[in-house]
Length: 337
Image 1: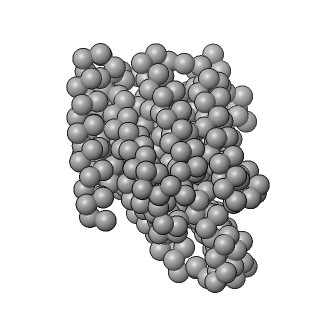
Image 2: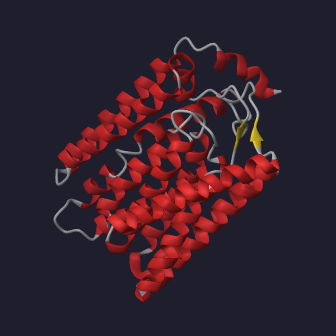
């Protein structure tokens, strides 16, 4: 395991360094603006190193475990689709609908393989929805230094403990690749993930979630529904912030698919700085994992209460962080223009 982690950490470090050189040579820079949370021009596209590292892990595992080649192959194809459309978008902005089409195609490939492998239609539907949602959630939440990458590492690590066999290895490859990228992006950003990275992170997390959900379904020791619900605890910070912000923008009649800085993490970062917010989100996700471990094996009623209370507290915190923000209000008119 140590060798496995070291390998993908090293691949990510080397890949990020090369991606930064490439971005500087090609002038692939995110310029500061009213819809961004940074103050200086910064290279983008560094997340290709994470995507490539996890892709190498999937190919290596498929070569070693022939019985898993169908699902690992579908995973690799889906990851490549999401990363490729993101890489193209980093070079020349594409329509969000083209990106969404690629995400749906990637989700469909993995979901179909999951069904064919014997997981069942329910698991396929779950995977389809999870991949489309989380791929875009990670894109929405990639706006300050270190946040999207650290959350992917934390959630991916937690899912690695639940997923079976080789998928645990995929999860740990993700964790190692994220750790290799973070020094380039946190606390000071020398390169951003770009759409290639944020989309890839969301896809990998969603695929791991789908496999873990399927694994829990086949675990007789734990209440199936209750254990499945607990998998959503570490995702709470991202799902709450992305979900409530999106709903508010839709209710306001804004063009919700356009870039903005109205998420709670962006509002808070303007007040406290990127580092404080990223660490706070990490602590919150770690606390959610601790709660999930404590509640594991509990009844459906107890788990439902814990999950409901956690998400309710998160929603109230989101509302409190948004209170008094003038920037989001000022952007409403701009978003409608």
